Image 1 (spheres, rainbow, N blue to C red):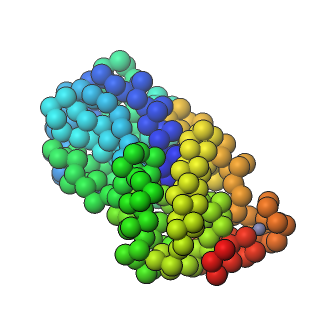
Image 2 (tube, rainbow, N blue to C red):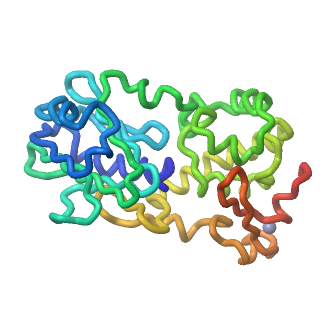
Amino acid sequence: MPELPEVETIVRGLRPFLRGQRIESVEILWPPSIDRPAPQDFAAAVEGRIISDVKRRGKYILMPLDDGSFLIFHLRLTGQLLINSPENLRHTRLVMRLGNGGKLSFLDARKLGRVYWVRNAAEVVGHLGPEPLKEEFTLRGFAERLKKHRCRIKSLLLDQRFLAGLGNIYTDEALFLAGINPLRPADSLSPDEVQRLYRAIRTVLRQGIAHRGTTFSSYLDAMGNPGENQEALQVFRRQGKPCPRCGTLIEKIRVGGRSTHFCPRCQPLGQK
Ligand SMILES: [Zn+2]
């Protein structure tokens, strides 16, 4: 599932291609991919509009249009946005033809991704917590908000209302880097642990972007290239392999229904 670094990489690839381009036509191959409005209204709303920019908010891709409205994509598990993909690729759900003769295709094998056209972006992304790589995400604010939650730290970090953009990969990597057990109650972290976690979140996300995302199965950038961050992962999907720091075997457990990878020695259940 694309997380912040993957979506950011896609946005950076799309932006120079889409900015200033007119949407000439929209072809909807799988209408349920359109969350709102109704598919026929969707096409009428975006055809003829100019894409002003391409931005990211959490795991959402936002395209402000020249009339002040927004085209928004949420890729969920397997969604892809590809520039000038060959004709008839499997799983194509939506195709937009552009003024420069190019096209943007939305593909989605599992059909869980969603496309929105809204007048007000907050309708779709208004629930999201702070952006972890922006100034709005402060150590002090993070510490204060952690104190209000007793749930497991792993589950809280996955909650997009708490913090936008983290998914299973970068949450496990950040908790390892900070030396914090994923089962710890969020409000039990010491000030030192909070600071380590704050820094670790930003470090793993920046590294993910620098490596152009993590590809295990379906994630590709806007040009169709896989990322390289899978080579740099320390614990995610490395269960049974030695911890890169201490050699103890990485374990895999389930936390809140999500597979979770950690080193039992570097991330003990008690405070470090
Ligand atoms: Zn270890």
